[in-house]
Amino acid sequence: MATTTYLEAIRQGLFEEMRKDDRVVMLGEDIAKYGGAFKVTAGLFDEFGPGRVIDTPIAESAIVGAAIGMSMNGLRPVCEMQFIDFITCAFDQITSYAAKSRFRWGVGVPMVVRGPCGGNVHGGPFHSANPEMYFAHTPGLKVVTPATAYDAKGLIKAAIRDEDPVLFFEHKYLYRRIKEELPADDYIVPIGKAALRRPGKDITLVTYGAMLYLAYEAAEALAPEIELEVIDLRSIMPFDIEMVMDSVKKTSRCIILHEDTLTGGIGGEIAARLADEAFTYLEAPIKRITSPDAPVPFAPTLEEAFLPKTADIIKTARELMAF
Image (cartoon, rainbow, N blue to C red):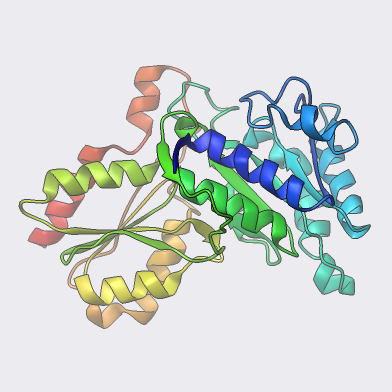
């Protein structure tokens, strides 16, 4: 088992699926000889050539539109957004065409749209987005948000093999910071299945993406007094409400943590489901820790203030236990 970064895990998954299935093709800006802005696709062009690793114009709507046509003609395209913020340029193609094709006339669109998301890299309001909830609201789309190298590889492989469109959000802060030993054997991680990252008895903490590591830090700091049970959703749509529900019925308290902004975030949906289906088990209010409803600031000091912090989790956990 070799130690592999989050970024390299995604690249391994792309290599393996392209070798396994010659229907898999890559499209994106500067993804061929240059290897992409973050080098996720480095080396793919050398092995698979211009017919399967395709440089495109700076036109996200054209990239996704072409991929939809390819998928309807038997290919399995993987589109890279250089920064996930610009996926909104292809919003109509994704939500009106790819998502609804199976419903409309029974034809699936087996394609992946992937790219770097998230803040904490001082990218400012146009290169730090967490736009997962724009798409989670659209029936027909799957939305995936891995937090570990193991999951990043297993989920990109599962996404490519899926018969319907999958959006794959890679947190850029994790690209070279997270390293794990990965198995040499082929594996996938099922889309829609959460992971219990840390068992506990006092409070359920539900999170995903880079926020998982804040949850770990808070759980360690609180360990002498409060046991946090940490659940990593891994997928935003579909999300594993069963695991969350079972945990909350055990702990009777819940914190939902995400980097996305407060209003309209997945935390609100999870809180509503818990209030509806687990109300009699709750001993305290459901709490959400998120970014504020504002654009991501450029200045490092402002970005630090904007993003959720470990101290926020510790403070909220203590308030819940004292409620």
